[in-house]
Image (tube, rainbow, N blue to C red; front, side):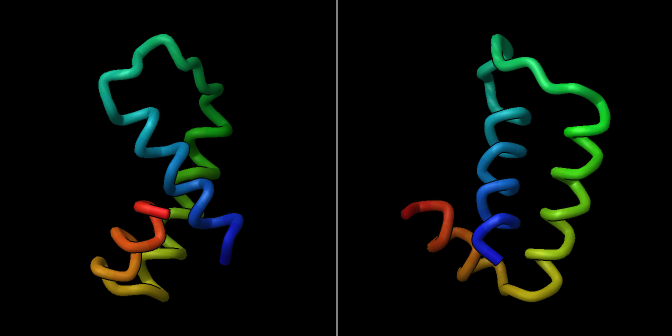
Length: 53
């Protein structure tokens, strides 16, 4: 589960204003898959709490 939370953090970086961080397309795909997995297992509050750590 930690791996998926880290993926969620990386996806947040991708979607934020930090455009200088470059991502490969397959990496974005795997991040989105991991994020979906996290969001299915955890509620939104737990995700926000995990990202804040």
